[in-house]
Length: 130
Image 1 (tube, rainbow, N blue to C red):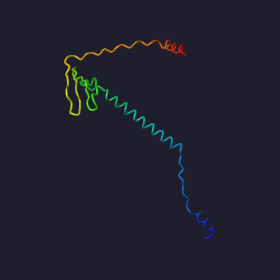
Image 2: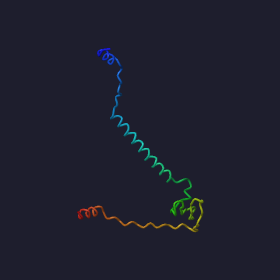
Image 3: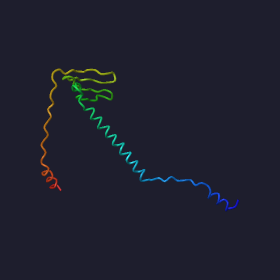
Image 4: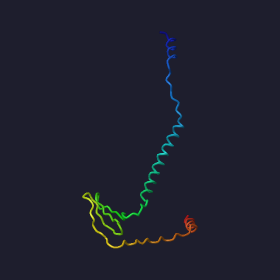
């Protein structure tokens, strides 16, 4: 075997083909896929909030007014049911009614927010401080 025959054999050998990769196209595909996944997550969150706040036929008769954690595994809940309020303790041993408030549910007064000054006045204050 001489050098010429080795070169001829190598020339006839099939060459490994390198796939032609379109980097820009792949990058666009990955970014669009990621965007679609993020959009699906936001859509699922919106749908969940929308379904939870939906009023059922006949209205809701039971709602949790307030909740407070007493320890790592125990909580106290103030629940409103059919115009009555119940103080309920929830723990590892189960659920226990602590107190039932009779009578009508007090209407919680919402304090009125202080009126905001006009935007021009706020902008003028900001300009004077500088």
